[in-house]
Amino acid sequence: MSSSHFPEFSERIEIQQRDRNQRTRGEWANYSHHRQKISDLLARFAPANRILCLGAGNCNDLELKTLLSAFDELVLVDIDRTALQEGVEAQAAAGDSRVLLLGGVNLLEPADLPKSPLVVSLTCLSQLIEAVSQLATAKSLPWEEVASKCLDARTQHVGQLIEWTTLGGNFVLISDFVSSDTLPELAAMSDDQIAGHASDWFRSGNFFTGLNPFAIKRMLETDEAFVNKVDSIRITKPWRWQVGQRAYAVAAIVGRRTDAIQNS
Image (tube, rainbow, N blue to C red; front, side):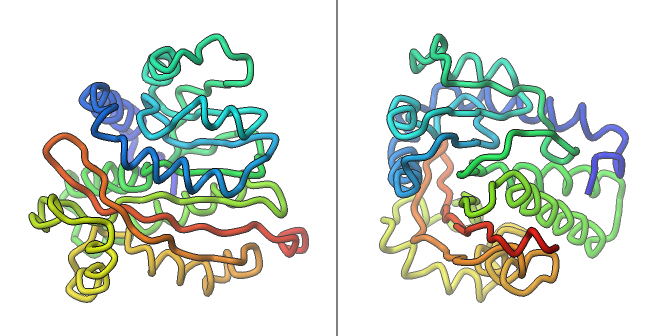
């Protein structure tokens, strides 16, 4: 799916992301647990010559010095160039030649990004789906069509992750799937409690449209667009992510791009 479906999309997503980055700029401390979970997860794939981070924003999700000790090059991608610059400056990494900033990248449009042995999407899928949903709803489209466009956005983004991953490399889709807006008790839950109750939320339909990690795993394992291109698909144990007064449940879908893609 491309922003050509909505002529005003490019401007809308950039405004939305700039606003989100501004609102979360001071959330470094709140992100501590979330950031540690991501650091621990990505460390499993080190060492590697490059890591490509999509939706890096103001870098609150990333401990840059830790990543630079494990990867030769760190490529940070976001539509908000200013947030990227301020994020690396805040972590005293602005002068490091191993850090490459790619701003102005709209992930719902075609993009020419460097292929990497590790590609990670940093909770940006929910933001892309939210933007598509808002635009479609504003056009008074039926809910079935809105949902279909959201799933199109998901399929495209997952395809991008695979496209930008080198053969034999790994991709990591980190995504929030429910918030304390519809699940108030989430704000006080431990990671173990989230893991114990998540299946109940999925069965009851209490999750963001297009972001059920089990549905994404199933898509990767059965959809003809992906089934011969990836393997070793798994879902991590979920964790809680605190953003201001709102809590989110987050999980990562991890997979490997296989050599079979050469024949596709």
